[in-house]
Amino acid sequence: MPTTPSPHAARRSERSRRAIFDASLALVGEVGYPRLTIEGIASRAGVGKQTIYRWWPSKAAVLLDAFTEGVESYGEGLPDTGDLAADLKYVLRATCDEFNDPAFQAPYRALAAAGAADEELSRAFVARLLEPGFAVYEARLRAARDAGEIAPDADPRIVTEMLLSPFSQRWLMRTGELTHAYTDTLVDLVLRAVRPHD
Amino acid sequence: MPTTPSPHAARRSERSRRAIFDASLALVGEVGYPRLTIEGIASRAGVGKQTIYRWWPSKAAVLLDAFTEGVESYGEGLPDTGDLAADLKYVLRATCDEFNDPAFQAPYRALAAAGAADEELSRAFVARLLEPGFAVYEARLRAARDAGEIAPDADPRIVTEMLLSPFSQRWLMRTGELTHAYTDTLVDLVLRAVRPHD
Image 1: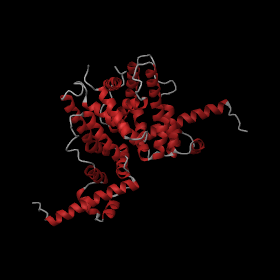
Image 2: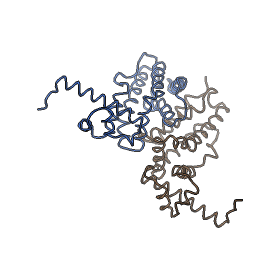
Image 3: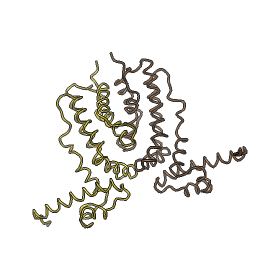
Image 4: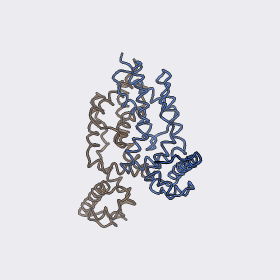
C-alpha cells in the first residue's frame, strides 16, 4: 500500500516542484531548448537530478508541466458579460500584454521552436496548451450563438482561428506589433464576419 | 576586371546551382535543418564544397535561395478576374494542394522549425518568403478596395492575416485539415467582415 506523505514531506515536495518549474522556465529562456538539460534544471533548482527523474521522464515533460501550471488557468473560461465584443477585447488585450512580457515570451518561444522541430513535443504542446486555449473561445462563441449574438451557421472553431491565428503568427514570426488597437480591430472584423444574417 | 564566363561555363554553373538547390531541399527534408551540412549538400549534388562556399556563406543562405526559387513566382500577383471571392478561393485551393504535398512540405517545415529557433534565419525567411506572399494578397485587396468591392476602411494587411494565418497555423501546428472546403469558408467569412458598409 502506498504510504501517505506526512504534511511536512508534502510541503517539501511542493517546494521542490515549484523550484524545478521556475528553474526550467528560466533556463530554457536563457539557453534555449536544445541546450536545456535535466542536470542544469536540478542544479539551478537546488535538487538532485534523481528527484526530477522520479517525477518526469524527460525535459520536455518538465517544461510542459511548468508551462501549463504557469499560464493562467483556463478552468473558468472567458468572461461572459453578455457583450461578446467587450469580452473578447478584454481577453485579447490581456493576452497581448502577456505576449509582450519578456518573462513570458522567452520560455514560450523556446517551447514553440522546439515543438516546430519535434513532432511529439508539438503534439503535446498543442494538446496541453493550444487546444485548451482554443476551447474556451469556442465555448464563449457557442454561448453567443445560442444567445443569437452571432449567425447560427458560424463555426466556432474557424471563428476562433480567425481571432487567434493572426495574433499567434505575428508573434511567432515577428511580422507585426501586438497592440490593443490591433486586437480590437481583429475582434471588430471577426464579429462583422459572423453577425446574424439580415 | 571581372572576366565574362564563357557560355559553356555559364551552363555548367547553372547546372551546379540547380543540383545544389535540389540536394539541399531533399536533404533538409530527410535529416532536418540541424543535421544539414554544406558537406552533405556538396556530396549529394556531386560538387566540391568550395563550389558552394564560393556562392553562399552558410547552409541557411543556400536553403533560402533554393526555397525562394522553388516556390511559385509572386511576380505576377494574384489573378484579378474582377471577382475577389473567386480569385481568393482559386489561389487558396492551390496553396492547400501545395501544403498537402509531402515533397513541398518536408523542406518548408524544416525551414519553419529552424526559423523558430534562430532569429536571424527567421527574419530572412519572413523577408524572402512570407512578406512577398502577403504582399500579393495585400495588392489584390487594395485593387478590390479601389473597385468598391470591399469597405474603404478595411486594412489590407489585417485582412490578409485573417486569410493566411489560420491556414498557416493549422499547417504548422497540425491542428486541422487543410481542405478546399476550409479555405472556401475562410474566404467567405473574411469577405463578409469587409463587405462595403450598408
